[in-house]
Length: 393
Image (cartoon, rainbow, N blue to C red; front, side, top):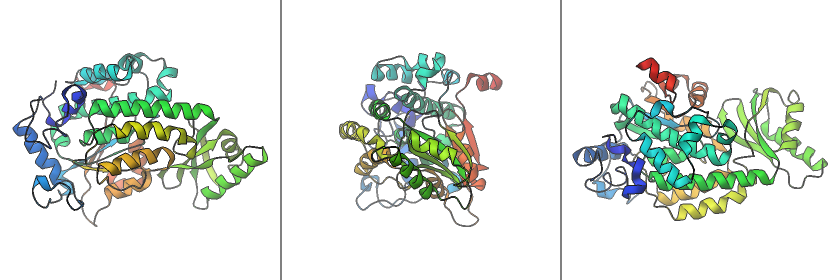
């Protein structure tokens, strides 16, 4: 197991609390990486948290000062759709990663590592499998980053995750332990897949122009569905990616209508996404109660670094806030473009932090480039493939 204090969340389900939630909130830890290093990490993370609510964090002692952006890093955690067969193979050499996958097998009831490494792809791509797979791979990528550049992890001041990636970001920030969060992801993924299978629906990636009116296009698509006899049709923007790029989700008939009439709505490109349902719309309402129930049973604490919510693009402030918004996220659009503006908002001339995308794929980096070119120039990807590891060796 590795010696980095912050990463003992990886076996928090065995030991009770990870260091970010244990040693960082208590005086020390008997887990690997605890003691004095954990105490110094506590000071580092707590000094990065700004805009405290009255009464929050008083035990840490007085008013906290913000860290300078040039002294810290930002971690971005990917979401569903970034998975691929073979992911994680290049991470197994790092301390603690195999332990994480062993814990995942106990929580999930199946061999997640074998599914990630060998497939089949059709099974890995299923919602119930790919969400836990991306969650674990992303936190395993943090182990790699810590091994190669420990200062980056220790100086992290903010994190954000795309959809299910928010759970990984919150675990990294000490708000949840690894095993409990993974179980919540399991429940979430299974409930979302069940909701998706109940109604023929999907998601359509759209590139528009300045004159594109997405709300009008969705309205016309819903009217089309009504003409087909579909009751209460759903068609709405479910993801805000970057300027002129949206994901529209809803009934399949609505999405097909938009594709056929792309020129009418000033769409320059449309592409159906390989997902099973209309995620982040009201068609996911059947998944709300199962996730809400499991989150009530989980010990959630205030993050020790800034973590931004997909729902409103603002920082999570306390445990009830996290519990509420993680549930609301299921039926609300992902405000990723707005979140990127929140994360990288700074005064003129102020340097941008180094950004690391931890997990499979480079989609979040591509989106960051469209949202904020200056911030993207400080971007790196922590890959999860074997090929990169062999090249480094």
